[in-house]
Image (cartoon, rainbow, N blue to C red; front, side):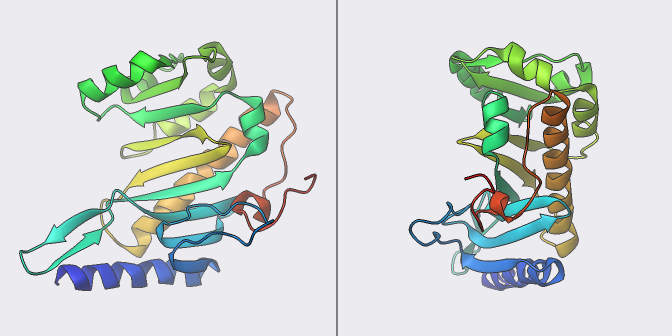
Length: 226
């Protein structure tokens, strides 16, 4: 299969996911009309929007896109899926944070530590697999207290490198593809749902109000109390 054929086949695969899960599909994600809620993944290739998985409203798109193919037949294909959800309630309850797989090079890790605080958790396995950080102006203790053993244990069961966090009042989940198949894409969305629901549960257990999951998390409607 040529690279161009792979690109078309992948787009068709994403559209199959959209049909199976009743999601809207955009070849390239656009902006919402002026005055409406902000769109997620604007500019993202093969964007899906809606209830990505049970209880997980948001948008997803291609990520880690790289050029592949021979000298006369090259195209850009994804090596990961990025899913996002609007979470202003969570952003108010915890500091912005990033959790990154430690498969990154040591040089990259050192550079990020210079401007951020690393958060160490009680889970040794989690600390060995992931680098969790908050911006230097935030206290890492706040995030450490928010992440319970259940969330940490669940993250370590994911069978591949993943990155996630809350940034600019959005939760993001980055899943590296092992194959460009429908099953792989749906596994990414289901894992994103697992993260979303567990982070919400942690916040609720600390007595912080959160909205019920709905289209507002996907930028399809305003939040109920907006």
